[in-house]
Image 1 (cartoon, rainbow, N blue to C red):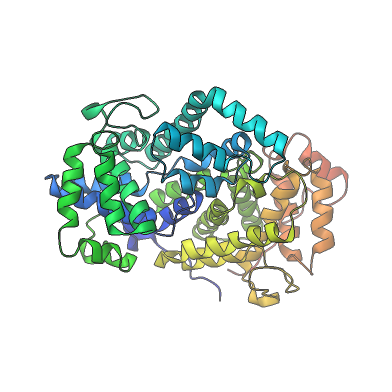
Image 2 (cartoon, rainbow, N blue to C red):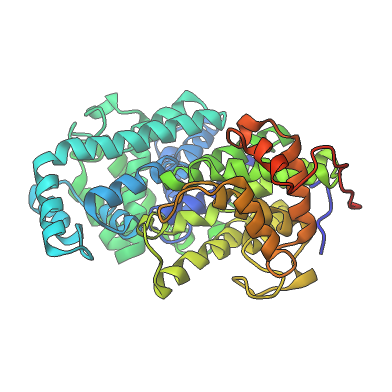
Length: 477
């Protein structure tokens, strides 16, 4: 069914939107769905217990919900250094204390499990020699990137600073700056405690969470905040809400956050596209380029300005589920095994799940979930065919394939534009919509060559694929 356009943002509260999109951050950290939202519930309860006012609690909620904004940016480097599945590595790392025996055991257990013995030995030796520098590099990358994206999302310096200092420890042994005590921003102190509390509660239960807070009090955590957590844990509804439905953590009638406007929604889509594109060096800029090619197609087809704006958001967020795919798969230089390809195929379902949690994003979810479907029914995940695949999804599919073919990938170099278009022509009518392919050609003919690669527009004209002066196609919106 074709979406109704435009879909206004005025019905979406900022907290609802950020909470839903934080499920993508859970994926990239290998955490169970809802981790960031549960941690923000813990954090705001602690904040209330120490007397923070309503406005400050809202800022704290944003900080904890978005604490992992920068985590995708170190995934590829982590895989390279540790020869490890970044999702599994990060999942276990969140349970790690900083005691030397535990750290050494963790490195030995997690490094190079599927690599050859010699490769694994070299990797472990390198980590033991340069462990401090490696940790600084990985944490500083995620902290800087996370704080930067928070600023782009228009959040305050308190929120950005809290995200940047997430890995600082009360005793000064954290990173990246080695801050101690109250020199660590309050939001960061609460966010780290809340994160660890949720990880241990979800993994081992209430008593395990309480025990971990006590064990790290005075080392990782501010003792006063541990006492506040203990007081929260004694309240009758604390554990029941934490263990219940996610929707019960922050009921809509308790949400005092502002509604987002259309411009802010655009900024949020672009920021989360950056999170996705940061996951792999081979997909850097992919979502933004797909948005560009999508808009070229939509312009050619005569879409209205509102509809083109909606399509740009759909293109920016179509691959958000890729945050749940390990870089050992995304960056693999050779062909994927059947098992690896099965994991890769899950990313479109992840996209659908994340975007469908936002009521006003239901149509975006269809595009995110369906951009690997084919007209002949041989696509995934649902095997839709023909008219079962909406026009909006068909457009993003063509834009997605074109960018994938014309960009470097770990298993091949970028193709010339003419070859990419020839492949799309071959697949027209079976895999992809021929009208969308023709619209892409016409759109590329009008674009400045520097935006699609030097010489690409001239190449298109010379190989006869399109006529530069061809009139735009029209489809009734």
